[in-house]
Amino acid sequence: MTLGGGAAGTPVASRWNPTKEQINLLENLYRQGLRTPTADQIQEITVRLKTYGHIEGKNVFYWFQNHKARQRQKEKQDHLSLFRQYNRHHRHLHPPFIHPSPPPNVVYEPCYIPQTNLGFYVQQPTKPEKFVAVAGGSNMMSREQDESKNYIDQETLDLFPMHPTGILKEPVDTTGNGCCLASSACTSSFSGGTVDRMYFDFFF
Amino acid sequence: MTLGGGAAGTPVASRWNPTKEQINLLENLYRQGLRTPTADQIQEITVRLKTYGHIEGKNVFYWFQNHKARQRQKEKQDHLSLFRQYNRHHRHLHPPFIHPSPPPNVVYEPCYIPQTNLGFYVQQPTKPEKFVAVAGGSNMMSREQDESKNYIDQETLDLFPMHPTGILKEPVDTTGNGCCLASSACTSSFSGGTVDRMYFDFFF
DNA sequence: GCAAATTAATGATTTATTCAAG
DNA sequence: CTTGAATAAATCATTAATTTGC
Image (cartoon, rainbow over all chains, first blue to last red; front, side, top):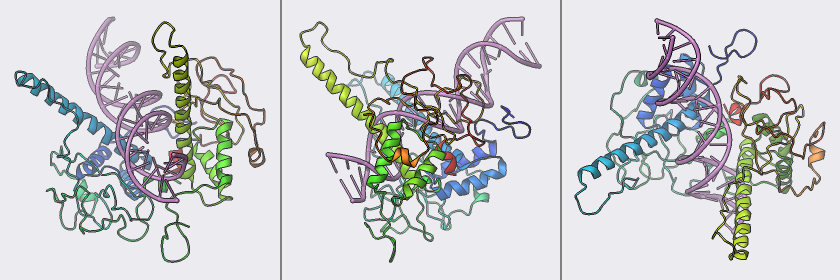
């Protein structure tokens, strides 16, 4: 509707304007723990979202980048306010200030979800145990994951074949690496061949 | 040659290892002023470089990113050493220190090159004069551009149809915006239809 | 009510930082 | 130690919310 592009028909908006449904689905995926979707995941998500309106893979890619970053910002803000509040209330206590910043190596459960054969809702382990050889499929592990108000609302469960064995909600992996179903290798290869690579791989 | 991938034939190197010729060409393009090649440019460059060995678009993309960044670093380092040297030599002068950092709004000529129909060697203007409407093809303007030791060595001229009207070496545009051949609109559309978009566009 | 003017959100790009192969 | 690859942070730019004066 905005900014007439060429001559007649197509309006050609200068940027993607997501619909409610699209946002809904994306946020659901995010809540499910998806942070840095692989190329294949982006592809699939894009296809799904096309039923609600025009969208491209890059939009999905960008959305996750931005959302992740801005959630992180927001979280930092929240922690900061908590910190300020705390300090206000405990001004009398001994050392002047308590540092708000990111210290906790404690929270941020790295572990999520089992893998469907479609490889959805899965983050690959941060450091694939060395020796994993084949190409750089090293998705960073996601932090956060809390903040899920736990409302598993519509969409998600309809649209995707979910968790064959159920979603792990409890932290299980205490190794510091990500978790896998099969505890051992954690290679990034699964479900057939090509090893899901970075988003870049299907750019070119 | 490194890291045997599958069973037999293809070695599948874990990362691109550029040949001399490839580097040569890339550096030439860089010296020509190319900083952030568009999708089409990357495509074309990639094709060219394939004659010297295996390469993908993303390699080209990354190369320019890294090279740009590291040239900048180097430049900063150079400036810093100059600064240090200066301060060493002028320690006796009045105010204690001269700040080395990025201040000069003075240098960094923004203007380069006319457009061939192939759209090579061109950076799009930073801010397309508002009202430019069509899609986000806003390549950042490149700074630097000096440091070209001016040796237009082999390769380049052979491989590509260069500058029909010649390369501007003198700064011309003093408006603060980038320069265009046609001074007015500076829209990002040229040479046929699709409006060369960002690299991402041919990722998806 | 309703546009023009501001402000807030957020999509898109670029830059900086980090990781690891060779 | 260099540098390809990947991610995160910072920034730019456009669209939507909203405020404001009429």
